[in-house]
Length: 351
Image 1 (cartoon, one colour):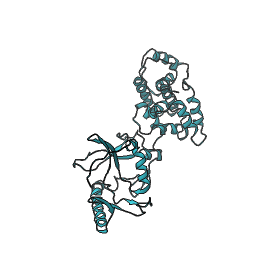
Image 2 (cartoon, one colour; image 1 turned 180 degrees about the vertical axis):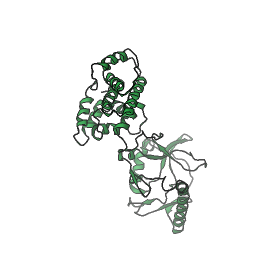
Image 3 (cartoon, one colour; image 1 turned 90 degrees about the horizontal axis):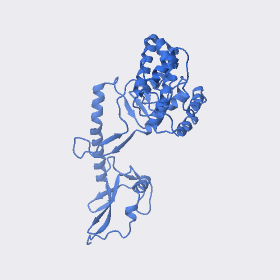
Image 4 (spheres, helix red, strand yellow; image 1 turned 30 degrees about the horizontal axis):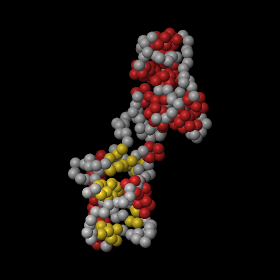
């Protein structure tokens, strides 16, 4: 053999979609090897290159017969100068090495579990979608589970050349106001997340909760719709498609089609306060009663309010604190509606 570079006579290789090749491999081989494809030019001649990475969970086994050369159960091994069916001694050595590596990989986690103790540690099962410690289980919402994915991306380990896994997605500190799975969210957490502009990983969960999960009739959704990148039409379709026929769902569907569904003009003290707010003045709550009046005044805010979003959210947050301090639960409905009015003004649903 001369090993002379002949090159490709057509551009079929350059134009092939790597996803098609990977899909074909996935249907034949398990586990599926990771490949990279490229075209390079050598001496004016274009050649195609396919690089197959060594799989960490080898051996790779044919799960079905494909043509005359691949039979179900075949294990191929790269010998010098050729790829051939693996010999027993090489298969035994490969399995022994895989077992040793598995023990090395799991040891840091075992050591961490032993250091934490069974009362402080949970193990995440991404197949079953649960966090468990042998005594209790926390279910991970299926929608959230779909967004947990791992990819190979370079060498991020201190050991040069060591294969590492990188978690992609939004990673943020978790506190009592953060949501990580359905069931954690409450009317109170919903409202406080909005007032604090909490960074959230599953904004559509808030919209679902407002429609069929919560008890409150007034919960802001525009902010969460923008975080999820949903238009007015998409939000309407999402809510309409949810199971159940709750009163909250009916109210929400009506609000989705109105730009000022939460706007309400109150008489008395709130009427005076709303004019001051429209003039750019901040009126501080002194007790639960005044806090309720301020919340009602916010419901009457008109377009082009001169106050900043942060000013209004901070004010409504202080109203909520004053109401909580005195246990004036009925006044909470005014705070929630006021939050919806702020939501309409600063996070309107768009077509």
